[in-house]
Structure formats: C-alpha cells, structure tokens
Image 1 (spheres, each protein chain N blue to C red):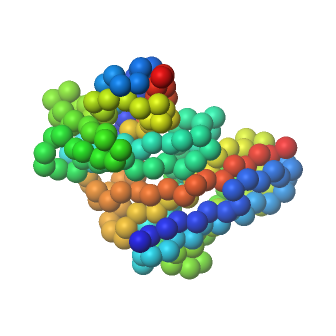
Image 2 (cartoon, chains in turn green, blue; image 1 turned 90 degrees about the vertical axis):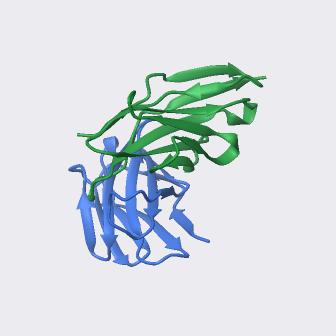
Length: 114
Length: 116
C-alpha cells in the first residue's frame, strides 16, 4: 500500500529565512511525488512534481523540492520565505503502476511571520 | 488553457435532503475527473474518479454517488444527506491517460457543504 507522511502539523519561520516542509513516502516501485498549496477556503494549487530525472525539482513561486530515494523523502524548500507563503501545504504520492490514485498527506500549515 | 468550474461554492442543506454538486472542465478532451472531500481543512479523501463517460470508480463506500453524463462534466450527488456529509468538496481533473501516470491533478475552487 502506498502512503505519505507529513510529520509536522505546523512550521513557523520568519520572513526572509529559509523554509523546509517535510514529506516522506512509501510506495512499491518508483514514486511520482507532488506538492500542492492551499490558501484558506480555496482549492489546491499545484506547485511542483517529481516524475523522473534530476532529483532537485523547481516549481512555482520560488519553491523547490529534493527527491531522496534512499530516505524516501521529498521535502519542500524555499531559500527566503515570504509572509504570503503562509498557507497549508500538501505532499502527495502515486505509485508508477497504472490504476493507482494520488494519495495526499494530512498537510502542514506554514506560518511566516514578519 | 484549461479551466475547471465547480458550483455552488457554498451550500447549506437540511439532513435528509438531496445534493447535487457540479463540475465542468474546459479546454481539454476526455480528462480524468475526480471528487475529493476535505474534512476539517486537512486531509483529502478521494471519493470517486472517472476515466471516461459513464465510467465511475468509487474509492470509499458513501452516502454519495457520482455521474459523468458528458465528457467534461462530473456530478456528485446524494439522495439523502447525513450530518457527516458536511465538508469541503473538491472537483479535480488530470489530462487523459492511464490512471497512475505522472499527470498532474488540477483542482477546482471547492464547494463548502454544511448539513444542518
């Protein structure tokens, strides 16, 4: 069975500092990994994904994530946080086999203080 | 470009009443379509997905049903709502392809359902 874990319910950082939102996964075979962001009362917005190739993936709004196969992790990072980055972040994983659905983590609330 | 529309945005319904949430996608053909529910602003639960007209797969036994009467239209329904059906419902789509490919899923803006 596939699963994804976001070990932190909330991450607090000061504006201008680097941020990391953690994600670990468990799938059979190769994973497809995604990050989404959700602002209050809105739908989820796609940030970035890892399918294959370079382990460092760059996405929207200056975010990036690094795929680490040995640690089964896909942490989301940004070099310098903005107050406007405050939101709920979801990691999601799908096994590469056909017929599998995208499974989401429980989400991590990022709070960036000015 | 592709867009996804979902309505109504908010809905307050009494227990036992019917439900119909609609979703349409523009700018693509034969998309994969999904209904998710998000409870308490956190985790997402996949309710239904569809890879084509009339093809509906249910992930979780529910008081809910889904239909896909047209290529880019996806409807979530209930004959009799329960209090536990309250939540934030999200419609989503991904490009046509085998479920399980590396296609991105794109979400609508969601519908808040409160059952009273």
